[in-house]
Structure formats: structure tokens, C-alpha cells
Image (tube, rainbow, N blue to C red; front, side):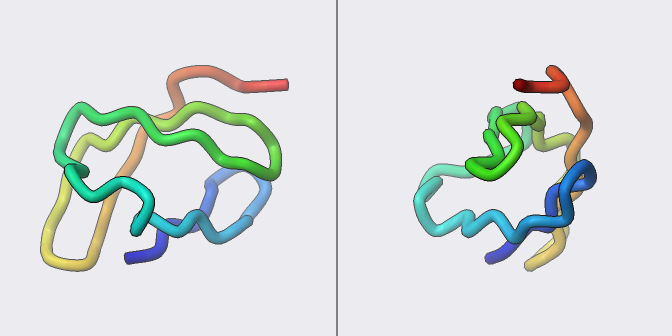
Length: 54
């Protein structure tokens, strides 16, 4: 599964989060923004910005 960062448009590979579920926090390695998973539907993952990062 891939997620596109809403801030920098970098693709975040979610394979490194094997236990991913609603409420998990994901960080973009490119811009440092912190995202919280708020909905999962199949391969679609929706996130909300928690911290603007660096």
C-alpha cells in the first residue's frame, strides 16, 4: 500500500507499517509531517495531519 503525503506529495510506502490500522501515526520521511490514519477501505488509506513537521 502506498500513501501520498498531502503536504509534499511524496509517496509513503506503508509496507513498513505491517500492523497499520485506524489511529496509527505515520511520518513522511521527506518532509517530516506526522499523519494519523483516520479511515481504511481496502487499499485506500485516508489520513489527517497531526503535526506540520520540520
